[in-house]
Structure formats: structure tokens, C-alpha cells
Amino acid sequence: RKAPAPQVQYLTVRLALRAPQWAHAAQTIESLRTDPAVMRLPGLVIQLNLLLAACFNKLADPVAEEQAYQRVTSADPKNVTARVGLGNLYLNLGRFDAAARELEGGLQSPYATGTVVTQWVKLKSRLLAPGSAEWPKVEGATVALAPRFARDSSEPLILRADVMAAQGRLPEAVKMLRLESVRRAADAHLWSALAQMTADLHGCAAGLAILDEGQASAGDCADIRLARAAL
Image 1 (cartoon, rainbow, N blue to C red):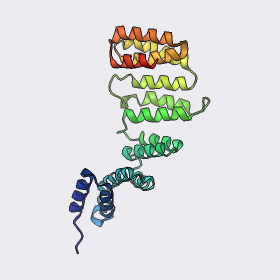
Image 2 (cartoon, rainbow, N blue to C red; image 1 turned 120 degrees about the vertical axis):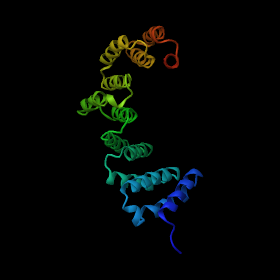
Image 3 (cartoon, rainbow, N blue to C red; image 1 turned 180 degrees about the vertical axis):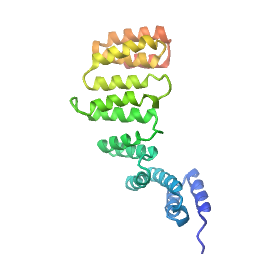
Image 4 (cartoon, rainbow, N blue to C red; image 1 turned 60 degrees about the vertical axis):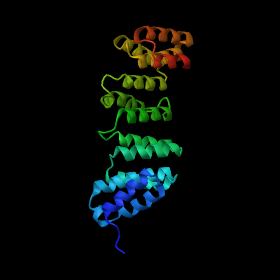
């Protein structure tokens, strides 16, 4: 019996994913990705392996999921989807150093967003010892990769403050955010971060005073209310 054409198999994959029938989709993809006609299309092979990794994630098969992602990174080392996928897989497996390496690899892609930057910086900040020689690289990334965030976002600065605090430079971090709050008086997210760090440095009452000031400047919004509840 003649095997189905790749186009038919690909349609079968899409229908199985929509159902969803993860095992059936994975089986079909495995057959499709080794088809000689498909193997001549490296972009399609990469896409199939990413779909396969997603299937194995749903099927709770971390070994096969890892292998699918690794086939992608072997062909395209800067593929941010595969790098982040591996990073999240290793996080779930408790392999934190490996996760950090994969996320850092994902940052080499120009398509890596601020979300990836944040995930890597926060993970590295938890892993590094206070005197580690890697801190300048991590802090520098919050500046160099700021364009990956939305325009005028305060997130890169808040992330940098988090890195400073993790190094024991909390007073410096608070001072930096305080200066920025003058320029971004309407930024409730910034006020919330400043309030939390101020509370860590000077106590809860000082943090609440910052929130009162932030509410007067940015309005009574969700960020301010959540920060107040957290304090």
C-alpha cells in the first residue's frame, strides 16, 4: 500500500493536534520528519520537531521532548523557541544550571523577547553566589537587552534593581528606582517595585508610604493594590 503523501500526513498532524490526539500526532510527525521529500526542507523539519516536542510535553515524556528540541538546536543553535523550550523543560526537572544555559542560548536570537531576558536574569540571580564573577554580565544584560522590552517599559530598570538587590546592593537599587520614579511618575509598576524594595530596606511602613505617593501620582490601580496587599 502506498504511503500517504507528506501533504496528507501534515494535514493529519494538524487535525490530530486540534483534536487533541497527542500520541497520534507524535506518531505521524515521527514518520513525516524522516520522509526524504520533507528532509530536503530544513525549515519544515525544524517546525515538525517543535511540534513533536510539544506533543511529548503533553504526553509527559521528557526524554523524547528533550531529543526533539535538541534536533532543532543542532540544526539552528539560535532557535529561541527550542532554547526556551529546553530551558523550561530543565526547570521542571530541577536542572537549573542547564536551564540557565539554554535560556542564555535563546538570548542570542534577535527574536528573543523581554520575557526571555527576564526569565534568564531572574534564574541566574537565584543561582549565583553573592561574590560570583558572573554578576557584571547579568547586570549588563539588563542594560544591553533593554530594547527587547516594550518601548518605554520600566521592566529593564526594575530587573536591574533586582540584580543589584540580589548582590546585597539594596540601598543602591532603591536609590536608582527612586530617581526613576521622578521621571516616570505615572508608572504604577515602577512604584510597586520601589515600594517592595523600600520595605525590604527600611521596613513595611516606609514601603506603604511609597505606595501612598505612587497612588497619588499613578492613580488607584491594580499594581498599587496588589503591592499594598503584598506588604
